[in-house]
Image (tube, rainbow, N blue to C red; front, side):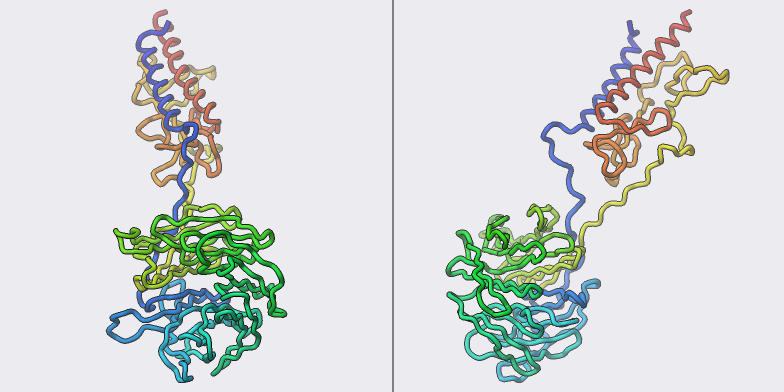
Length: 497
């Protein structure tokens, strides 16, 4: 029969062990641990006018910003095309003037960036029917104007130096020269054309038919429909179209819904809804990281409509899951124009343009935490814990000693610690103890200090780490407490004898 103090020690040890189990073992259905973080706001640039569109050049890596002027600017119009260094978020140059309707240079907004030029530079829309080209360092763009119907959509053509535009029911391929723009091919569409997506490598053009609820494919070789169509479900008109050419998926913005369509099957594969008061403004696909970045902007005057806060969302392009890596966008609303987004290859930096507050914000990807160095199980220089057995000078087996107290002393309840690997203050598993003694870390649902190890504990009883499953680790802790009690009974019996 256990003596009262020995029984009390067992109860205390058992309570500590049960506390460790309660804190260290997740209950059935418990939430998963939070992610490593989200995209963080790094820089906010307010020297590029009112940004209307973004394009990160695939070869030069420079960020082009098509802008309008900001109302009330005391120093004159800020319209034009800006070239920004993505690393420093500083303006490299400003294409201030572009070809006007009469051919004379004029300061006009860079309404839409159609596509990149070889090496560096962009094609962009000016005015109602103007198309220009400019590179970093140019003071003015080159190009000209078309006559007739207004240009509503534009994307880089499959042939170098060309741009595909939509003008009413006509899809046109135009060549941009130094002082003029020439229509080379024309296709009459069944209805007014909408947003475009062009795969220059494959020579395919997708054009939206919002009237009939279709996405229609046109071959750039013969500039004619090839019969491939994708039916859109019920919903708002398509406001933008982005092609993930690597996966054969078209992303379509439709008011409060962002949809993704598989080209091969012609079926929708994903749909994301806006929070109340928001609409989707733009999406950028990064094949290298396998992610799609969408900008949702608020639409209204808070608190009457919406909350005045937009959202940057990040999706996996393979699984179409929301990765929960986005960020809030205060002040991003649609009252002064649609926001736009661009992403650096690899997804390390994301750029969000907001016409509503005349800003360009740079978001940086979260940096994974660096694992803390943990002592190796074979590290002989690590001091043994205070509870390690001491060798008997005679060479025989030594009695277990739970501490530095004499044989007649009771094990100290407050000095008994069983280190278990757990998260340190920085969230990394480093192996150690906290104020709970046997509980290593706070709120840890998986033991073990090495990344990728799930459900393991590290029992430090002899100076050597032993990785055990969570259940085995609990049993080992109970065994350690029982051993201490048996030692007490053993030594007490010797003294009484």
